[in-house]
Length: 75
Image 1: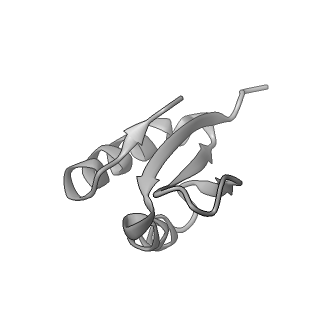
Image 2 (image 1 turned 90 degrees about the horizontal axis):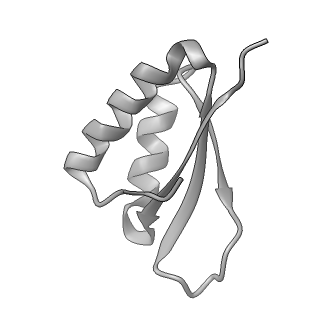
């Protein structure tokens, strides 16, 4: 059995709606969940998960988004 590909991305709060929109626009590629944090923080930590066979495509999407908005890979 294959393990799920997981990564955690830190996105500025002001860019998070765009980030979520892009993940939704690529429906079926991955799924995500926002990690609870302090509401006063200026960022959102988001866990992005996908089937291992889609890892390359997910990484490509995240790297492309990283050129458009500020992303920090924290795991």
